[in-house]
Amino acid sequence: MKGYHSQPHIGIFGRRNNGKSALINALTGQEIAIVSDVAGTTTDPVKKSMEISGIGPVVLIDTAGIDDVNELGKKRVEKTENVLKHIDLAILVLTNYRFDETEKKLLDKLRALDTPFIIVNNKSDIINIEDVIIENETVVSLSAKTGKGISALIEEIKHKIPVSAYHTHSLLEGIVKENDTVLLITPIDSEAPEGRLILPQVQTIRAILDQNAVAVVMKPNNVRVENFRPIQPNLVITDSQVFKTVAPLIPLHIPLTSFSILFARLKGDYDNYLKGTPQIENLKDGDSVLILESCTHLSSCEDIGKVKIPKWLTEYTGKTLHFDFISGLTPVENIEKYALVVQCGGCMITKKQILNRLKPAVDAGIPVTNYGMLIAYVTGIFERATGILQSN
Image (cartoon, rainbow, N blue to C red):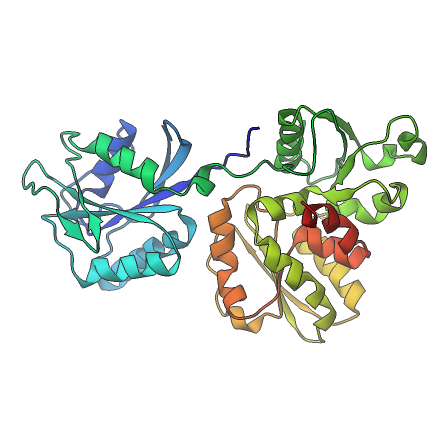
């Protein structure tokens, strides 16, 4: 059975002029990053995709030097450190085997995030010492200039990167069997891209086909009670936004869930979502709610994060709530001021990015949920919409 593949993110870190950009170019075989003898050439994180046999597509992130100085340099270092929360593997680049407090602090932060790392010594064409051990890690000796040691580094990447970063269980594993019929209910509204379906819907269709099952797709207005007489679907998956319309039309003996809830199980903090969602009942007047949308797009009058969820949550609780919105992977500040954090489905980012994004809230004891689970709760079908996932 094929699983859902996401692109692992690999961050390249080190002091200025240690050859981080040259290493990116050597790994990809392309002149992606600017290489210069001038310290501080790389100012903002630069991303490049490449293919690694046995893993698949990965994203390499070139970063500014961790020893950058002055006020502007501090901002560059801050951006570099923000990258730590979004990667699945780190490569720390040394030269002359220099390792002191600057590098140690970086590794301590990686360990706190449970992120594996590789230490490499670049410019081994100038100085090369075999079998050096630093922080209980064997240093990979290489030269980005000549290419020596690059193949050894790639093998180490394949060894160190967590399998879960590039291969997870199938979106529908344990839920859909071969020859099952799955009904997908997909609204086409102003948020839907012109001429195509949104990514979670496309990925779900692919997962159904990978299970050798049958996908039937229709819009909410095509759902009729009589649809369920000739062919009984084994599962109905709907857009969470139309739970209220669709749920009464689906016989109770047919399992019902949503795209967003499936992705919550696949790559979200599902157990904490389950615990956090019912805490909606504890919201009080004046509480602040943080809504995290991991992709960036122009808002519409039907926007689920900025319009619909605040409306539904306010109507359900009857409370006066304050909502803050953060798109992309912008760092969250003052997490302690929020009474609830709501994460989108996360179809565009990795599981590691979602978990690290929610970690400050979880560590602070702040309830977390996601779009689909919140909508299911305020619609009154939380147990029904999550039941089939909890039993598998």
